[in-house]
Image 1 (cartoon, rainbow, N blue to C red):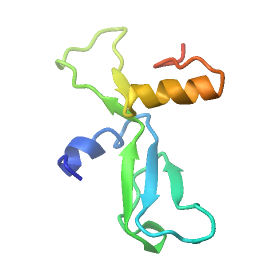
Image 2 (image 1 turned 30 degrees about the vertical axis):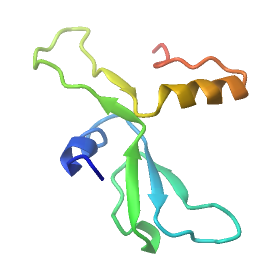
Image 3 (image 1 turned 180 degrees about the vertical axis):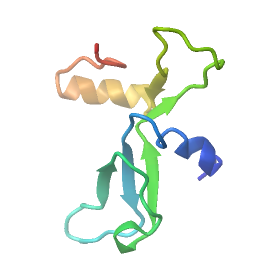
Image 4 (image 1 turned 135 degrees about the vertical axis):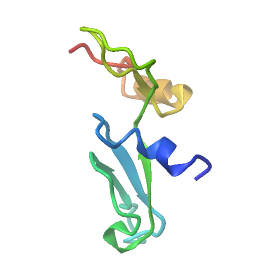
Length: 100
């Protein structure tokens, strides 16, 4: 991982986020099934193999001031060109955040 661990993991701890969990070794060599999704932190040796976590969203730092309408600002941790290609293949429109 090129980034410091805390810089990446702070996007998971106490945040509304999911992470892709990728195992270094394949569990079943005939089917690619070594990808999981988690809402929480996962141990490095999850499921008996070395595991890497990739948060789906990156939360941006705020200036520390709170307001009535304050909320965390986040962006997808995925290449926008790839997201557009996936959306087009699925005949969907990609939106950064859904309306709450």
